[in-house]
Image (cartoon, rainbow, N blue to C red; front, top):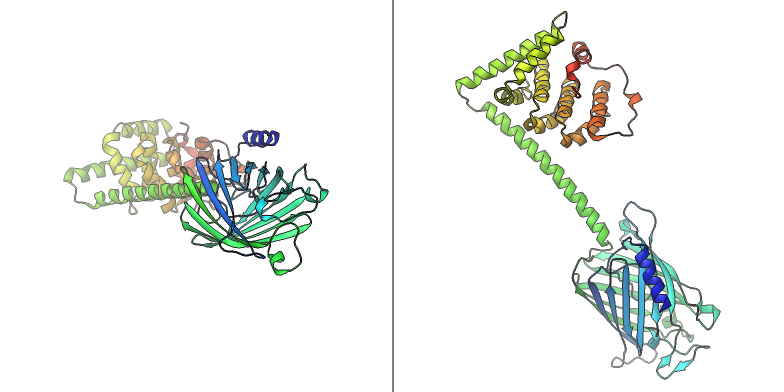
Amino acid sequence: MRVCVAVLAAGLLFTVPAKTRWGTLQFVPSADMIPANRAVVEADLFWVTDTFSFSSPVSIQKLHIGLSEWVNVDVGYADGFALGLKACFLKEGPALYHPTITIGAQNLYVNRERLYFGAIEGYPRKENGVDYPKNELYIAFAKSAEFMRLRMQAGVLTAIDYPTARDRFNPFVGLEKYFGDGAYMTVEAQRRSNEILLSLFATTRVIRDRMEVSAGVVDLPGMINEKERKVIQPGVRASAKFNIGWGHNSMDGLFGIEDRIDRQRDTLTNFRREINALKEESRWNRERINALAEPPPEYFERRMQVLDELTKLRNLYDQIPFDPELVRETIARIRAQRQAYSPHLRLIITDDETPLRIRSLAVMLIGEMEDRSASPILISMLQRFEEPTLKIEVMIALGKLKETRSRDAIKALREDSDSAVALTAAEIYRTLFGGDELDFSTLLEEPSSANGEDSELMKSVPERRISQ
């Protein structure tokens, strides 16, 4: 009982989930865990090859219980009550190099495979077989090689009450090869009393997530070599496992629950991005369709009025000497017409036939008006257009709108080939999303915009900063 308490305490202390999957190892301890609220009922039949009789197999029953994702309990009957439990305290992952590590105890009270074994020198005999070493402790390691569809497990089995020193260090290895469609092959090797036991099993999941059957040979070297084996009697073993309970489990090859959740989360993230892109595309197309539709005469009059205001504003920026107070008054007057001007501004910024300078001013006014309905169009423009000046104005407008959906688009532009675009993207990204590891010193170069007039304009107008 002290062993049980120690293992349970370890499982509660290290509460990182194990790799929760229903493994296919048959004979050696497994580092994998059964999920909470699940139980696997197992029935084994074993035929000794030396005295083979199909009608007289040895039968063992087991019950594997998932108390939680990091603590499992095994109970069984092998001409006596057998108990085992294990706890996982380190979990592997797709981006991690360390393996899953599990500690456990098995064959408490009675060895669950005791009816397999023959007479062993140094162990007291029982009426029905041999009292093989019990109260065993083990540590198991497991790691998957997904590209090979292979899961490798290894560990050491020992017990302090072994009557001879030869059984106090028994390593074991298990290899699970997945072929697809619920078919596995398992190779298991272990050392018992200085003898190497090699077993080979084939397993198939006949009912997904519910039933598995397996068959194989135990102690293949002993079956081939006629030399008398002292540890175990070679034979053929067949078993069936039934999964009962509820909750999640993994029957998807060698992947565990955590792997499936991570992949599902990545899939959902990609779907969200695609849906957002489709929404932006739809809004873009809807705006363009509305622009091409036959509008009433007053619609064109208002469009011309907006274009006229933008032209006046451009002339004020070009005026020498530059009068910032007059520019602010003009912007305030246009901003007061937000309800009437915003629909036209959203169309003007996407019109390729409108001069670039006018479109840039329209983008700037959208930011000043805080027209958040234009955000999807602005975000889409960052990927559609190559003009550095227009990209800069779009990012400044998104900064004024505090549009967090622009994170990916602005982040990508921090490495734009145009230094002015990259510097603006870095500054706005830092303002909206906080500090970043990006080296600003690499961006502090002379802007390489082909339009010198536009670059000078960007430097000289204080109203263009997103903080004002």
